[in-house]
Image (cartoon, rainbow, N blue to C red; front, side, top):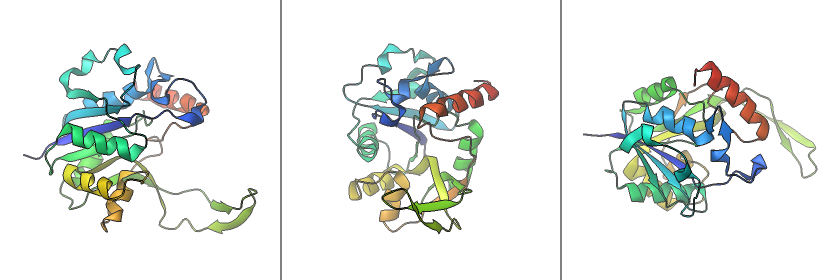
Length: 227
């Protein structure tokens, strides 16, 4: 029987936050930021296991109490230098069946909801390729030169902003990442195989915390969600 699993790459640091603590452990609504994504994923009844892939020298994760998640949460200390390395190492260490679905989700997207997960799984569970949560680009896009002067305005027609989770079969995603190790998201690796992942309409609330001011917005949204 095909199973659904989640994988959260959490071996990075998040230098743009300007903090000496790795971004995924910054306090957010009374918990480390990574807690909120893990809590949503572990609470999803369709997901069998949630793998969190940490740096081999991570000294922070074990200082928090994760017992509420039981054996469903599995830490793997095999993260790599780049995101793609971390995801690939996690896939190899998890030893999943090739046909199992894997939902790769950013630790820094704390406002993921059960509704997001349900929609993603419902739209992709019978898909031949897999796909990602995403949002159509709404803002006007400007291309700049080296001096931050506008060169031109780019058309936003048919442009989407990628989010996570990104959901693909374990065997296909492993093959794709081995083939294209320099990608910045899983969909790009799948695209490099000549395949076309599906775009599943998401919401702006599933944003990635990147800068310090993003923490304030995330806390407000989590409060509204009752978390």
